[in-house]
Length: 154
Image 1 (tube, rainbow, N blue to C red):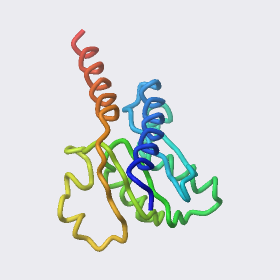
Image 2: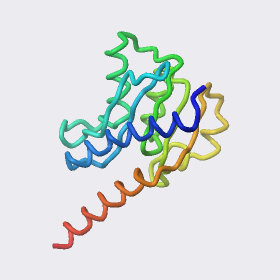
Image 3: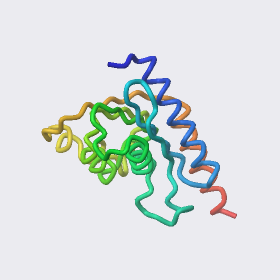
């Protein structure tokens, strides 16, 4: 099992992916998939630039990892995400057989755990979920949406 120091290291790699989303004028969310302490897949939001509603960071990272290891089964992996996964992404994570989710920002509007609460947490998933807050991940989201609100006013 990875240490808290390792978890923070990989969350910061996910944050680097979120910065790429931000630079593309996308909601700044990033994800990396790790197996044996190595990044095997990474992704960032690209729904607008790719004109694809399912191009969430998690989905992109899962597809990247599956291509890289030539297998859809992502057993014994951890996905690090800068924002709590939505229900769609949680479904993809479960279908991919990812063992662990680590995220650093809660999503009270669309996050699977925040919105569904105990209904999800008490379901017999064979997955570990950890929340480790990182200020930079929350700050980039706040900055992005503040900039969007300012543009709408003028």
